[in-house]
Image 1 (cartoon, rainbow, N blue to C red):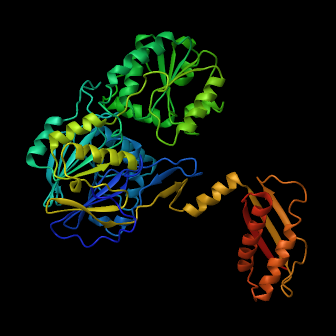
Image 2 (image 1 turned 90 degrees about the vertical axis):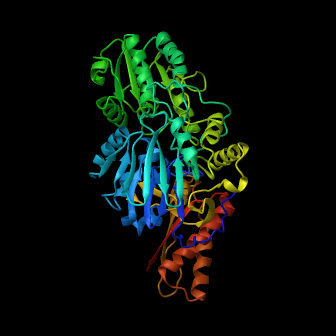
Image 3 (image 1 turned 30 degrees about the vertical axis):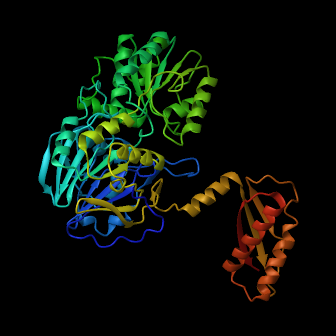
Length: 563
């Protein structure tokens, strides 16, 4: 098994007969999926998503892949294939199109509609190429011959893509599972997978998210009894939170609400937008007169009301979180039932727990994955993955989409079906994999760090600034104002200490005056008079003193002013 190595160097020049695969996101994390394929000096991008920040990344809106690897060759990109419409696969597209706006977006009808709506907010009019399962295009994308296959996922219209090149054929599953009873009756095209296997798949890129989960993923239809029970027993309002893209789940909720004589309203900008798109395109079938405006719904009897909102991951600005904190016009009350119909994204456990506690405090009954069968995964479990390996019989395998433990579990599954260990490539973000003469191997590594989006700023936030933010949040800040005599290098007046977020008693910083005086004396002896250099010395010495004295590490901001 080929493993990534931290000391990998810049990859060598790609030989003419080789296909290069560079994951820039999604390998080693759940999110910001993006893979670049290079052949004959042309580039094809598959997916371009975002990763949502964790608690240790304060102030960050979303995290992007690093486009630096392709920035100086952006004109060589022949297209961006989008496998489906989830944010972790399409959310980064607006930022990549800022680099070059006319890169064709290649996707199914629903996926294109969702990304086009998103791009309107960024004032970008994209070049789009709508495709569907069964389509094959040998000529439009340079040396890449693309064929699309249906896959079942937790959003309609998902596609796998087969990429044929002069170096061999790659099959990329996208996100998929093998639900045999999908709500839209659109199953994963295993016949197509088998046909490609007969033709010969040189490299198989497979979804790893559920590789640790034994057996087969439960069908969406098996959720119907639990959802039905919620609506049958709820005494007042039913408030459902879900991903704003989970059309199948929301269809189940609409049908059940209709059967129980309830009216429905969508809450949250992304929910309203996405469900409007899904309804317009026929992916969401809404019974007549079921959807009503929110202000009209508020005048109805509570047992005739259903709200569908965002916030299933505890996002602080989403509707459900704001309801839990009493920062929303919808006031949660005794007898309301909250149905959280989605999974827990790793890292969001604490935020979701806080929301559940907040809702419960106001008297709501919260039904979630932990206490009822109200969610099934959109990803293939181990049994399904093994099934696919046996059908496709690929020459090489590269697990994608998952944290490192998921990738490793998926690699082990491939080996268990008889694939030689040296034919399984375990890569991470930035690791370069070359397919040459039918063999895939790691060839080097490129930069693939996190690019942070903070409001209108892209890439301005660094790990250093995030560290400062964490320090401000956890330790507080102390501003030291020192007026220094330019002739003597000594304090002209006692320094001022402006303290925020740092608990202390009056006079606690008086001993720091001696520390500052010693620092200035040492600087004068060494001939250091530059204000910036003095500030650096003061910051270091006062920080050390604060740690010794208080066992805390506040952010020290010195200001040296010449008298």
